[in-house]
Amino acid sequence: MSVVTATVAWLTDPAQWSGAGAIPQRLLEHIGLSAVSLLIAVAIALPAGLAIGHTRRGKVVAASLTNIGRAIPSLAVIGIVLPITAAIDPQLGFKVYPTLVAMVILAIPPILVNTEAGIAGVDRDLVESARAMGMRETQVLISVEIPVALSVILAGVRSAATQIVATMTLGAIFGSGGLGRFLVEGIAQNDDGKIFGGVVLVAGLALLTEAAFVTIERAAAWRGREHPGTNRRAAASVPT
Image (cartoon, rainbow, N blue to C red; front, side, top):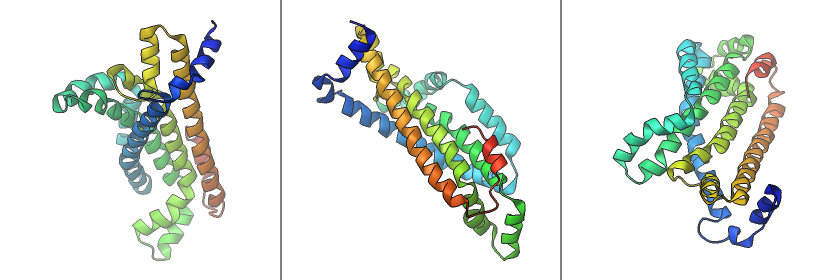
């Protein structure tokens, strides 16, 4: 039986779509863990990026921390964090928390970089005009800079979300839930259908995540056309 045939047979087997450990359960686990990781990363990186982009302070420190975060492999982060979290909570501290920490660290750089670049790239004349109208700094940020930079900021969130979905499979090595379990179990059972079926599911979920955020970005970009201060060169230069 070829790999393609085995994969199709596994994906279309009704037994894989019902019961404990089936595709729907693993899919929900994967989405849930990915969503939590992304929300935590956004809660950390977004305010920092907004502050740095608006004040133009702390950019060097942020860039250094971002480069460090990008340089450390996610599997290494899990291995470093695991003994600490496992000592705190023997169950979730071994299976869940290390993976969440690794995914958060993975997601922070693109969100932080894009947010800072998007805010810093807003036309300064537009910002100064808002200040001349009597707007406070917080009002300038919320009413002027964020709407103009929204599509760039969302591009960073999209990149982070896609990376999380694709990399979350590493957690299965340590017993975490999600679609990565099919890869780990398939390798242990020498089941090519399960291995590549899991690969197809992860790839499909990553593509759907990408498509969903692209749709949101386009809506934000369309709305951003109403703001003449959009710095399109900054948007084009930011990695997505």
